[in-house]
Length: 487
Image (cartoon, rainbow, N blue to C red; front, side, top):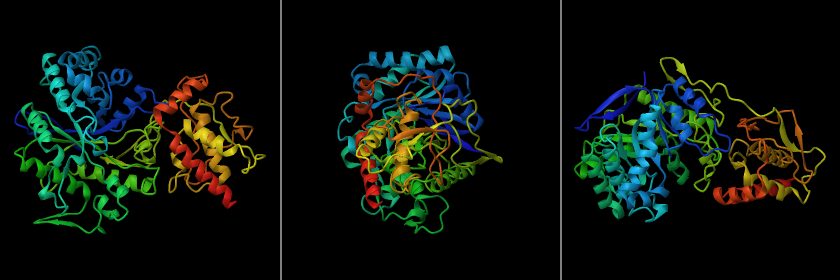
């Protein structure tokens, strides 16, 4: 039986219910039907979900599903919401009240922004996040939802630190935002709302080549522990979480409820983002929750939302190519790896998914890898399709030059719904009905979402500007050229 904590009474004590929580991201070129996603969650014991935006299709599908919902507000909306309670009230009416009353959606939280205090953002959202939180809370109260729905702010773990020692017990909020964090924490406490924190052990490993690998996982015997007084930490998740708890204790909020808004491990796009590590981490995470295990400073486990449910092939790759591979399921709801979710139950795949025709676009056997049109063709394909699996150390990173080009051509062909004209590439490519997948590299066939026209060039240009794929495409072109030179 898996226990995740949900709900908070007026004294800040937590109440437990069965089930799993997950993040459902929607940045996909070929999204699954929302009803299929909701059934996928229910079939696998997920009874809580966090959305990054108030998507109408997702919210309607979640109506009367028995799944509790956290609805996110994108950072771009923080400024207008912070400027006016009436704007906040209009947002709540349109995106919360309507779906509760009309569709029976069980909304529990509104997530105001998404990691707005990241150091990479500078001060972009520093002056709007707290006022937006205040206005959303006021709007919820005005709508008669003040007790049912709580406003919170999902923050990255970089909002707190433990100076130079790395010991959780000396944790405190980051110096440049210390006073702001205290104001937010006090406001959450006064309104009976939780603090939401995202913790990513994978990013610790990604950012530091000297980071001890085993310390990123649970129940690892090879990791050198962090000794903090009488407490010994054997994994970074517990050390990170307890650094936050120390910061809360130090500033007078020892009992404030905490939600883990995002935690998980990607399965592709980096040497450390692979199926073995992803399964190891997520199984360890589920096991510790299944056992009701907290941390040394908080013995009761927090409410947790695994990141994420399904891969998203339109996510920005600026943080890294792994960003499109956080799902515990593939883009189509198929299984990546097995997970035991308790009571002898294993993950089950999505049902009722419809695919495009069983055919692939590959480099023609008659084409030459020295053709001068090849680099430009690959760059074009990877500008408008997801080629992140081709990176060094990724699932398709060991392909030869011809297979490398075939993968790029096929991803574009599938992204464009296999339409006529989408497998030409200066006569370098052909359509085949023989699956070119081999070893760890999977050549996809996309979901049939009913799009039967190739977008015009103008639409593609707009997409390029929006998703910033060109840098990634250039990397793969350079990789291809290196492989050609080796040949």
